Image 1 (cartoon, one colour):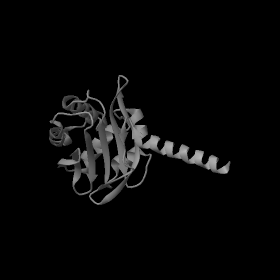
Image 2: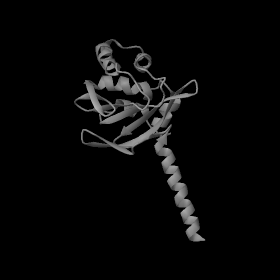
Image 3: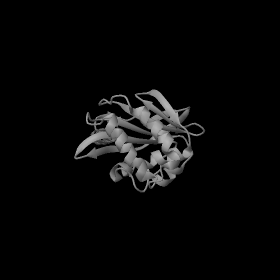
Image 4: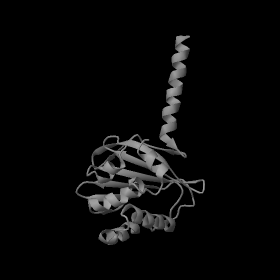
Length: 186
């Protein structure tokens, strides 16, 4: 009887762990390495619009945190990963969402970032496909390094840019409050 009970508990735990690492069909890595720094999955969730899953957003940090302000302001290596799960996500729609997100995360103080935002948006000019993955990795001394499907697209310097970019998802005025909570592991 005890063996059956423990087997049942093991199956339950395994199912629960698996459910937490797969969201909208996207299998999330528990750890990633950026520039030799190991980062752990802090949390992840789905960005929805009109009841349609658009992308899975995940946050990777050196150690787990539930404080969005601390994550945004941190100078430690960290990453946000977006996995596209809908064919409705296009380069044009992504750039529009980024524009809106930067306005919100900076309280409309875009002037110091204007040129860097325009450069950042050039990394999204190729056609988007369901299954595409984007990683925005902050590396101290380098800035934000952008990867599409594991291929480096370029970098944008400045911690102020990192704060504005990560603020899109983690600021006090995020693009999606539920996604923010999920990325912060709440």
